[in-house]
Amino acid sequence: MESHDPEKASMLEIRHLAKSFAGLKAVDDVSFSLETGEILGLIGPNGSGKTTLINVVTGLLHADSGSVLVDGTELARKRPHVVARAGIARTFQTIRLFGELTVLENVEVGAVSQGMSRSRAVTIARDLLEEMGIAEWGSYLARELPFGHQRKLEIARALAMNPKFLLLDEPAAGLNEDESDLLLELLRDIPSRKRVGLLVVEHDMRLMMSLCARLHVLNYGKTIAEGTPAEVRANRDVVTAYLGSTA
Ligand SMILES: Nc1ncnc2c1ncn2[C@@H]1O[C@H](COP(=O)(O)OP(=O)(O)OP(=O)(O)O)[C@@H](O)[C@H]1O
Ligand SMILES: [Mg+2]
Image 1 (cartoon, rainbow, N blue to C red):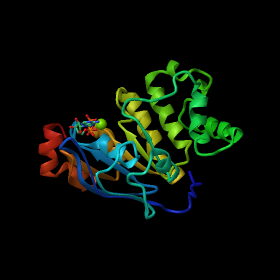
Image 2: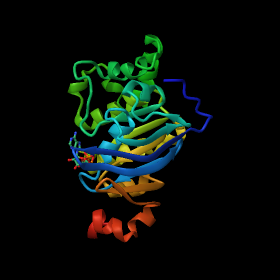
Image 3: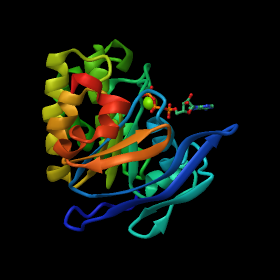
């Protein structure tokens, strides 16, 4: 990953992105943009295309059409390591850690994967574990970590790649309310401290309304709304498709 200058703003632009699976339009002409320092929420019912969108943006799946641009550089249909080098990191809906490596080593891998020296990677990894509040777990195996801490570890590993943009797929899934609140406070600080742009996918509306400046709403792969949490909560289409009477 090219070194990320925190003073310089960057822009991630998704333009007319589309991806089908055997005729099912999982992502259907979706466009939005995200700046470094910002938090954008991506919400929508189960199966509305949120994970597919992240997979297409990060190169895990090939877009059928459309663009993914970081500061004007085309990344659609590029391989995952190319996308990572261009400054886009992610976490997974189902946690993917190196279970047999230590917690510290998991974070080091993130840094080393972007060309950092081993000694620099260790320093960065220690700092990130501290920031995520799991420093005392550094020498445990990742699989020994309590579940809630595994979610934080995955975020620490992604941040070790020094990304411009971090895409989080349901970071609070499986956490209880207290753990979610703690995670919320950790996430809230990341964009301003590291000048990273966060895209957060999450079903916990309480968390999302408090965390995100803007929300982008999908339904059956299509954008049905984008706006502030207040605007989205008041949007009839969103209430019908997703929020229902619980919002
Ligand atoms: N690899 C695949 N092959 C075929 N269909 C897929 C594949 N991945 C996803 N889909 C389908 O694409 C649609 C979008 O799925 P996706 O996982 O992106 O939704 P999501 O918004 O992330 O849902 P959730 O909130 O449940 O995580 C669904 O209909 C899903 O069944
Ligand atoms: Mg998903």
